[in-house]
Length: 231
Image 1: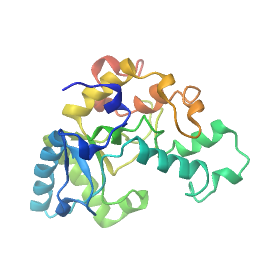
Image 2: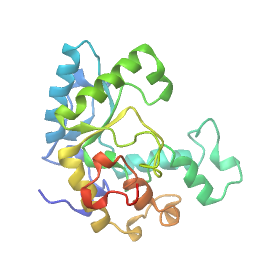
Image 3: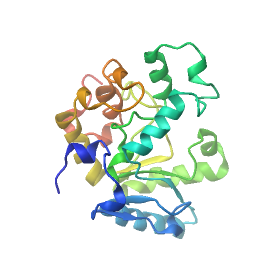
Image 4: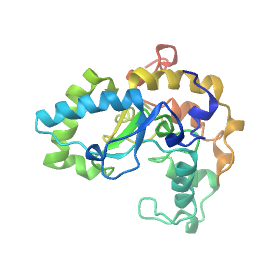
């Protein structure tokens, strides 16, 4: 299984790859979700175990290729989708300021873990959901059990151990047996010249997207040689 730029940057269609499979509709909110087959098989076991414990999990986002991530990014960049209730195209922001605001929760095309088929979002992408009784139960179950099936939360709360990157995402979980290998390969194969083809792509280097966002994740999701120093 070759890890290459095409896979790392999501420049493919998952339905055309033999190592990706469509997620059964009973596990997600709609048809058309895909995961890498290794991640999908592990998730089926995890979701069954959760159901046995009375916890209902539903995949609401899975593999997103470059083109889909580009639509998400550019819709926010151009104000078609509001970002924290604001139209970023109407605020007189510099390109760097606009990127910084989008990068609180959304990845630049070519840098998203959702490209890899290893990562998924569950139940709700609204932080408020995880303050409800149901959301608290879901997060507690995942925190206590996900590791047994190979899954971990990349975007934990910010601290001295995770100073950079996206804000905390309690809904986002990653299949480590595969994603940690892709994480290790990313800084070796991808350079800022690879950030092309979307609005605001020229801000990637100034925002240090590779170091601060692709690698700005929980230590448990990083290869040991990429662990942050002095923390």
